[in-house]
Length: 500
Image 1 (tube, one colour):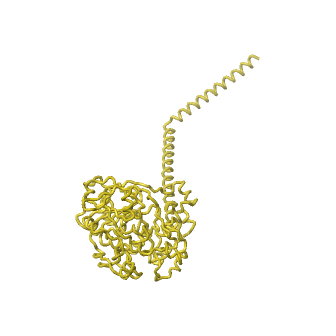
Image 2 (image 1 turned 45 degrees about the vertical axis):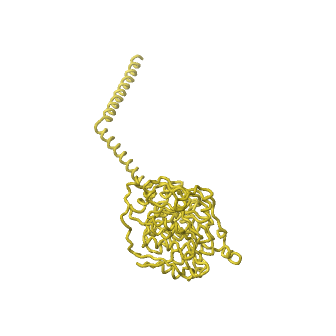
Image 3 (image 1 turned 60 degrees about the horizontal axis):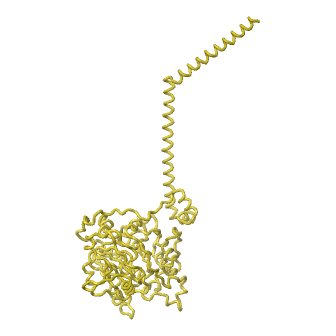
């Protein structure tokens, strides 16, 4: 019995010893294998490959994501010009597709204000030594008499025929065109004011008509600019009476009237029934009101200038050797879209706005697209910066003639005239966010309104409705047009902005 027990015990012990020896050997082999040079080299190589692969994956993923964004943006730009309703709906800011793209960050957010790269010190700005040479139009003169000047009620803008209008767009070295200020047509200046503006080579001009703005004094104006510029505020009788009652109006020793830095220029006998149309006279025909001016900056009456005017001329004209600068519209680039906004906001009679656009469409005006050489066809007309060259003066005359003949919405006419001059007229159209950084916008004292703005059909302007028509402007809307406008179909418009 004992011998059997001893034999079994020795067998178990020997087996345990063998297992211990095997485990120890396995452990030694494992330890030797883990720390061996071969194993270390293999693991290092694998780690390196993993890291390189991960970096490549990140790089490829980033490139693919950027390409997707680029493709989406290019598709968005193309779709805005597409005639297909599904694709053009992407531009509709009220549409679900637009909102989806906006949510995932594919729609760029326009800035309201942005830094203006103006020079630091007005005293360091060098004035040009001479005038920009006139190369295309060398001599521009103005028509001062036609059939309307002989009538009982002469027209300020003249009685422009369709053939005369067409001829005015044909550029020649010597040109003579209608440009307002027909005899007995209104907008006369006093001899005192005429004498004062003769000395004005640099002009900052603004205007208040029908008393729907109050004067805003410019700020940040250097002493050099105060001595160099004439600050001229053009007013009508209604606005002058308002300023006498509500502002500190003073007279100089010669009898000139002032409100702060602004020298008041009274235009006697308003040339038009429509105050908005009256306001286009000093805005567009600045070179006619102030014939000695070489440079001018126009700002609407609701704007407060907050940048030195000398810095504005240096930034927008002299630095880039430009002669005409204007901001692009915040919401629209397409004239037909702007016309739709004018109708929606009741800025003039809807059927007359449509008639205005049908004339332009008949004459070949295409909706704005990226194929055009212009940044936009629609300006933000509250500021105009220009040198009074012959070409710029011609452009201003042709622009004003459109306002005189058709609707008073000058933003509808601007791009049309640029288009008709076929690249001969050069302009610098800068970002809207820079425009907002030049000025502080103030609300009107009251919103101007006229009965014609509520007209919905041409039938309302017949019979008793004849009294709603303007008596001294917009005659192109009632003069038979030499073309079949009934056959014209206006381009479809997708509203891209509630505000616009």
